Length: 252
Picture 1 (tube, rainbow, N blue to C red):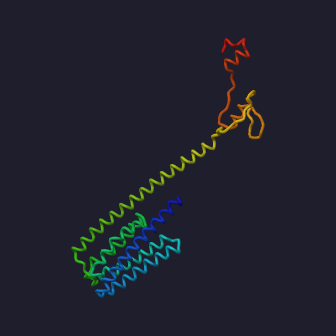
Picture 2 (tube, rainbow, N blue to C red):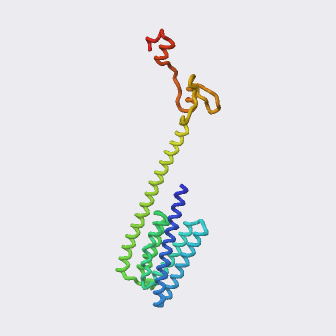
Picture 3 (cartoon, one colour):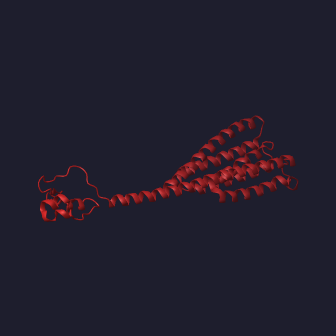
C-alpha cells in the first residue's frame, strides 16, 4: 500500500515538473512577443504565472504536503485566468489556456474532487464569457464562445475518461497484488509446515540406525518422522514372515 502511495506521489510530481517546464518555456516565448508588441499587461500576467509555478516547485521540494500545494497552485492559476479572460489578455487568446485545466484537475485530484473543481471553475468562467456587456468585459463573440464550450466539454470528457481508466486499472492491480500476497502467505505457511530430508544421512550398515545431529543413533523411523511430515504404520513383509515365522508363511 505504501509503495502505491509513493508511486502515485512520484507520478504527480513528475507531471508537475513536466507541465511547469513546458509552461515556463511557452510563457518565455510569448513574453518576447508581448514585449515587442508592448503587451505590458500580458507580461505582468506571465510574471505572476511563473512566480506561482516556481513557488509551488520550491514548496514541493521542502514540504511533504503535495496535495495542498497542488490545490493552492491551481487555485492561484484559476484566479490569474479569471483576470486574463474577462480582460481579453493576448487579444482573447488567454481563453486557450483553459483547455489544460480539466486535465490537471482530474490528474492531481482524482475523479470526484477533480469534477468539483471543474464544475465550480467552468460555472464562473461561463458566467464571465457569456455576460461581457453587463460588466464591460472583453467580448469573445457567441460563435467563439459556443465552439469553446463544445471543445472544452470534449476535453473534459476525455480527461475524466482517462482518469477513470487509470483509477480502474489501479483497483484491479491492488486486488491482484492482494491476491498474490495472500497466495504467498499461504505458500510460506505451507513451507514452514513441511519438513524435508536432504544431503548425506549417516546410517548404520548393519542395524540401519541413523545418527542424528546431536551424534546419537536412533531408529530410522524415528529419524524420518522427526525430519518430515511422514509417520509409520508397522507391518511385516512376506520375506520376513517366511524367515522369522516359517509356520505362517502360507498366510503371506
